[in-house]
Image 1: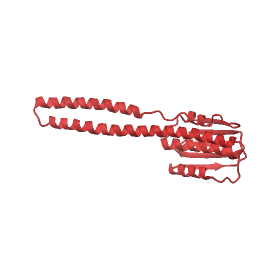
Image 2: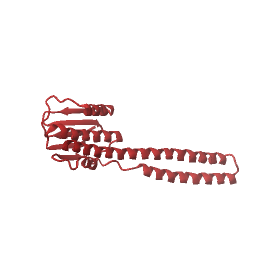
Image 3: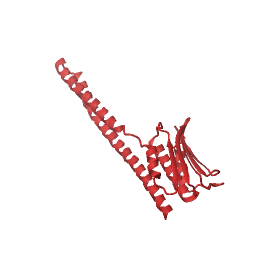
Image 4: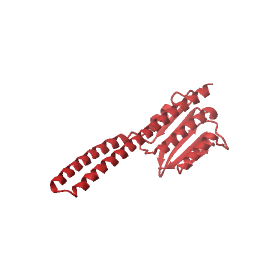
Length: 208
């Protein structure tokens, strides 16, 4: 029962992290659509005023040019404001992973994340899911007391390595969770490998 509750805790935390990231993605999509509509409308009005200025006398032309100038300045302000909204802070992976493993009884989880990583949203989700699966498998199968999770860039690749000090497995077989994660990493152009010779380790890699 304790194992089941601990796994549920990890799964719930991971779901919360991924939901927050999904919400940010949806908000960026909404803002980008608004930006598209805004620019399209105002550029149309701007073009019409400049076209009109070409076909009227000097006095009327100055009126159209002044109106076009005001539209262009307003458009610039709107674009800057909207782009500012789009620049949301990426998820703090170090803090997110720590919150996911906080309070697990009988298991010390140490997490190290390279603070300079710049990952895409799909890559972030893949690494969060991999950490979640590693923690769950350690709780259920490894009889470990310690799990180390390291996420860092090594040359042209970014890797997450999760290794426990448990019983390991000489010929490890991937369950549904790790099989699904292997497919996810391969779809991102990366790979997922396991090693059961010294405890149990799982490594996910993607191109930096």
